[in-house]
Length: 489
Image (cartoon, rainbow, N blue to C red):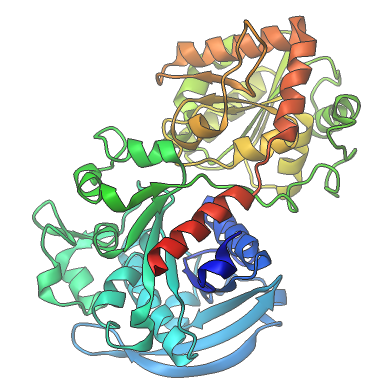
């Protein structure tokens, strides 16, 4: 990488979650893996997070107290305690912002009315903590709406302080969630001046404020997690009401696809697998993992069956309406389906119904189970990711790493990472469909089934190509380093 030659050496990541401390989705994976990739190349990285009560005690026991101060926050000048606890792990320094009033109850996200004050406080406290620690970054890289006030504070309240010299990047992981509330609520808790509550910054719909919109306006660069999603969010279909705002700021918008942590997701060393394997023995060992998965879930034990996996939050975003519409048609005497996830009760109920109707052929695991997810990635033959929209997607990258062929809709990062199978040549690394239609998903499943049963040599070629693909953070981290260097000048 060019990081050391460019002179960019200090990057502060600010976000609401980070594996292994707290994780609810892909944001937590990125906040963990990207800083580590940058640190390995010599960058000086700090990650700033809330000190939630749900962080496991084993990590809290390793933290060191770095100090505290009082910070003004609200429109009427109320002050709040800011404590800093620090932990260094794998070359990355983590600074946790302590305040029991905001972070010592419930899950990270409890409800928008409570979360707006929480993340106003966190955004300002993170910048204040950097000044307190006398650690001034070249780049402040903040993530999603929860940290979207950081670029605004940086250019207003902190403009004349040491941290005000930093440049800012705001990354969009999922534009659906934006931090929308009444103008009065955000004005009070942010303490920001009235002239920011106009249509170019916070104002939407004439009477509401949008935290993400303000951050996008003030950030020096805006990134999102795939090139296709960067284009999609400038359209009515995917812009979630901010497409015109993003189009206006398109000159600073960049799409960089995510990677995955290839140490965490490594089929050769994965202790959760019954039969670890690499690309040299995947064709021999993957059936062993399939048998173990079938045995664990009470499915008919037969390595010759095609096992379709679905690992997902059970929400409408994930294309589950399409899956439900064709579920019965996906099944035949040679096909099994395994579902893992929780979410909307209507999808949970639907998958439970299919399991009850097709015992031994369908298993619906309505839960989160880390070990089971690893075994599905290893034991399934194909993974369904038919999303309505998907900014990047990590499950298809993990699946490829484990030699499990993805079946995806051509949207966002799915389109950027899965090349469609070509019947004429056998090329590609997965099965894809374009329009959001159930019949097109069914066609993709049937094509996959045909190749699996009738052209096994071609299927094996897909498996091997997927395992050979570089899905690490190496390339994407280089692109971020280039962006940091460009900003630093």
